[in-house]
Image (cartoon, rainbow, N blue to C red; front, side, top):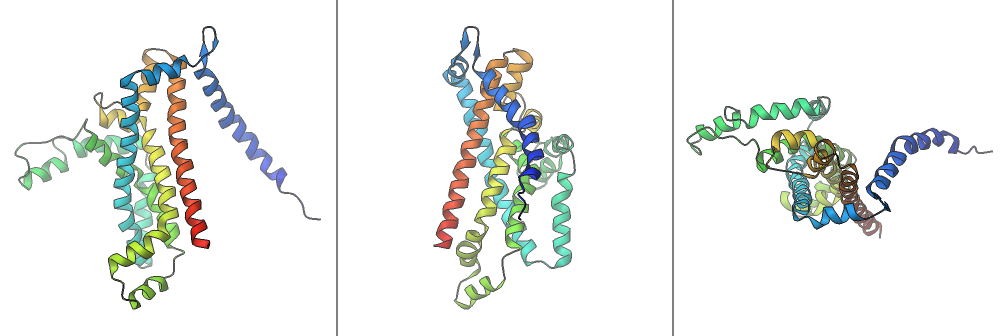
Length: 275
């Protein structure tokens, strides 16, 4: 008789309930806590303040900009891996995984040197004559996007490599025989095949960028406020835990909506592909 695998899933379910579902339920419940019982006042306060709404928009824009940057960098690297030999593939995998083994705090502080007035970017701009004096990209959105793209780049490279590793070269050879050039092959053959990997990478990059408190605080500075910093201010400075919980729930819901939308797009593409 075939044995059910459910007993083997029970430990994972218990861990998920204990360390994810329960804290999340407490967070959501705390966001509705008021002096007279359950209330929506905290959500009304958040969305009723134009500054808070602008912070939410800025956080979403930062995530989208990082997704675009990592996509433009990740696709060529993944294609290089696909076309490369064994040694090149090993080097690319090594260079992709090494940053992930380094603490996010260490990588963030390394970007302080890179983006500073005496950093390599400033020196390069001066040597090319673009600027006549040292330039700092610290505490700017451009500098923050550059740092986030480097930090989150492996999150989009690895899914693309996983997709391309299962893609036969005969597809591009058939397209070449049909008269398609390199750009047409990329747009009509490779990009549709890489779409599931891109969708997975976009979800990971957007979620990581939107919740990266350390990098946002250190590189972005006090002038560029995002949702994680807003939550920290409500908890650590104003001690308004219910409002902080409501803001955290809004951040989770916004990321969750993106996850659901991209998942639906992925399923639609697969259905179309199997039709």
